[in-house]
Length: 294
Image (tube, rainbow, N blue to C red; front, side, top):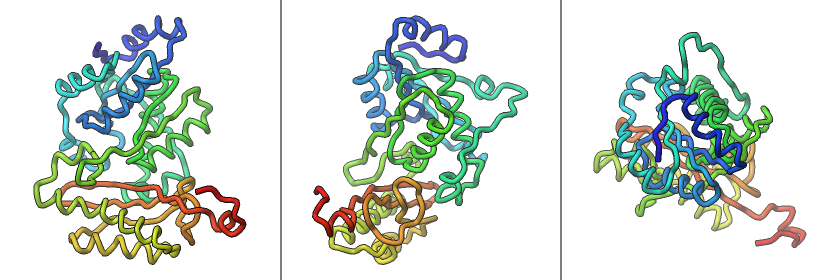
């Protein structure tokens, strides 16, 4: 595996592969690799002849300077993990390489960014995400880019970005990877102390409680959500939100029907975590006519 730090070097490295018509995959990351990141790299390795992993802690998507400074960084360890799963190139640019002096462009996606994380973190967060992803896609020019489903809103936003701007790349969203206790893997989990980690489990338990309510026949989103709130209250976690929304538009649902996304976010100690799960219910119309499939 080679580590490259400039756009010019990266493009030069990929030029031969591109001319040969090889499939190039990109896994965009902010480092501090865990099994979730590695699962994306393995997926890219099975589908692509050349795999690029970007490692860049993007300052543009942080609203809090202290949060940016606390974000875990260990490039040497990350590089070893990436090499072990067969990554070809680790692209680790400096902030000045990504945002050179005079940089004055922002890429914004409206609608999907204005709710949930956008409501709680502000428009600057997603503007930072969409701008850096646009730049990474332009820098690498991949055929496929891989993202995790844990950041469900981000994945939807990037999908809209690529469609709206006619970018020639396929976005593949891969399943959330969880620890044995159910906690969704995140680079931020390393900051959880013992008591905080136990409290953090209430997020996945809340989602599971919502799922159980729906599986038992509950179709009222407020009633299903209350089951999740009970789990959070037991752990004394005050969430930023716990919502049931459309899996396509992120709009609140009036009835649990079809594909519904249960999403939760909250702060445990000094660490802010997010999680989600997709709930599929046979649409009422299909169920009533007997045309649905299990």
